[in-house]
Length: 410
Image (cartoon, rainbow, N blue to C red; front, side):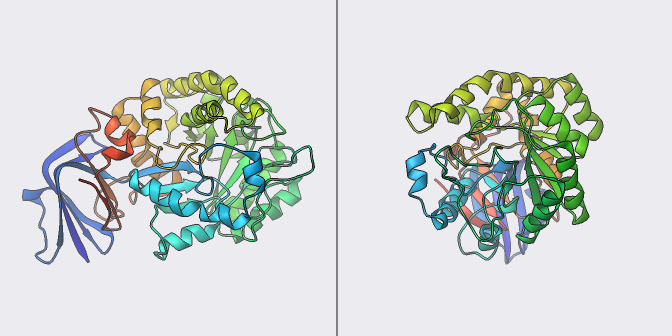
């Protein structure tokens, strides 16, 4: 199948160049050509898609989502009454909302089984292309240990999602192997406490350097990289020393950590919008008090840390932790990054070329160069002039994935 999408303009985030009167030709799900219409030959049998009034650009990439979580806050009684299978089914509307917001590719950072990726690939329901971590590994009492004082654990028991709690070097090696067996594209570690975990604090490191190193070694042996939920300064540094590829959140970076990231060409995935949604949910009565207090406590430090990273030239890849907030609201992260000094162009690159490079899709996602995935979006104007065009899902009027129109709004 050949599809030709005709738009008013075509924006290349890598170069910031805009071609007017543009067309993108997609053949068998892959970009064949893109550019000004007078320079692109459109096959006579192409299915023509009229995107009049829209600027076309590559589909967006979110490097940190949780499709299994609804994003409507945390009600512990509600969680107790939720069957494990319902957690998986949450991914169906989440995937649709994510796609409708213009995010045609995501990295799921834990909790979502590989079957969700497989289901989307097989066309069972619409959603972005995915890489999945399957589970997030932490120590006993760490970020993914949802064991409460009453003796109840709120971690859903799913047969194809390995237990997230692991202690010791050899058990870590085995759990990484089990996670890869379960279909993981990435290994997710928690090297610090977090906001939504009941038994730890964000400023404390978790997992030993030896445990982290063992996970990195086992992942590398099977061609995977490691991402680390790392908020505490010492947790960030432990992860970087052990060879982790991406730092998620990075709430307490300092000069030494920045240098380590620059020297090792590591990436920061800030997820600035996540603590903001914790605060918003708390205001609606849908967040435990202990989580709300931690969210409020970290918010300003988080912004200061990310601002330092941006000013220092650290690679920043777009990620939102959506699933804390509602799916489809991913684009708000653009505005938060921009407020901290990241240019509009760099914000767009963070969610296209940079994100694709960080997760291993360079040349395939985040670009409309020949050979790339046939994924694009259309917005009514140039997002370099107004980031709200990609930040607000209602402004994303057209979404094409694999050459097929999956959203078309008037």
